[in-house]
Length: 203
Image (tube, rainbow, N blue to C red; front, top):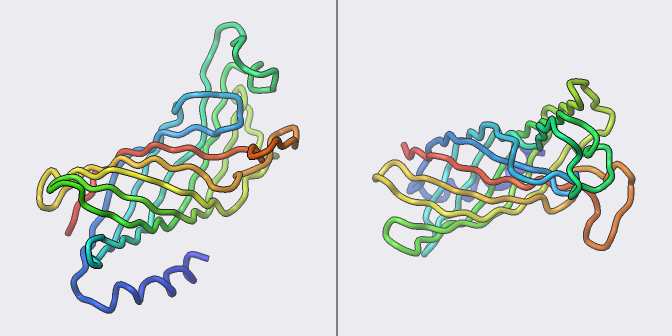
């Protein structure tokens, strides 16, 4: 899938030699909507290489990224009365770890001399899944191999070659069904929600 996308998109950047490339390093904080837990408690790495070029008033950017997503609960006290009566309410430790390799495609536009906004979408391929419930590994509930997500972000130029990126993303389609299998209106299952912080270096 990733190879096919690169074959389609890469020629766009080859019409002109005026393109920029570089790499980024950062962290992602994430949660899974629909698992009855709240808070961006799962922290993991986000690493990418990128290529972009200016087209009129905006930049078109292509990335190849590794990103960690999932959710985490670490509570040792009594049950939380605000949680629904599901299996996640009756455990002390829960860790849902997902690793993806993906291609984000974005459009960036300057709003000030050192501030830009971005929006785009990404296709991520699941490379690893680990679900830990009270220190017991249970990977019986499989996550979809492909994740489609939408994201928006802000970029601050701190020097000619460095800028800081804050990006919020959410799955467009569920990554898997609820444990009960039930759906309600737009709530079709569990979704990744991620807030990432990265430093980009332009070569």
